[in-house]
Image 1 (cartoon, one colour):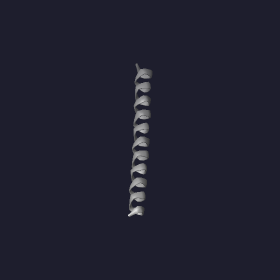
Image 2: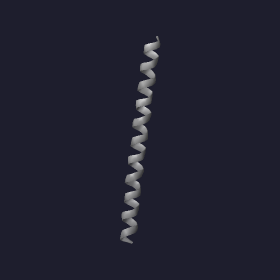
Image 3: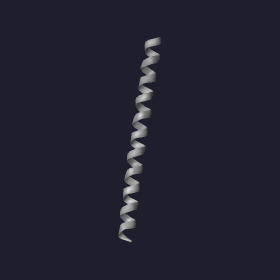
Length: 41
């Protein structure tokens, strides 16, 4: 029972880390895209 809870928590932490990383990547890509548009303008 206890190990199942630990596994669940570890899975949730890993999922939140992955989603944060994806968000950061999307944000960086958006910033790069906007900078490129400004450079072209």
